[in-house]
Image (cartoon, rainbow, N blue to C red; front, side, top):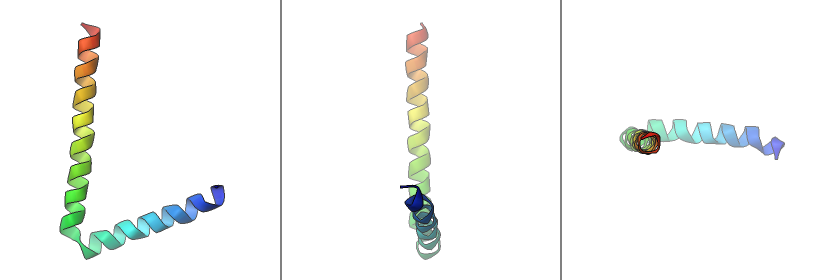
Length: 54
């Protein structure tokens, strides 16, 4: 498994760079969607913690 970790990481990075240069608008949309999901999750976690601590 350890032998596959590094090559798979390089393939993932190469794919991300290729996607960024070949389809920049779609790549930006994907990043925005990911960030929105992270922020929504953080907001929901904050609501949960607020409700638990009351």
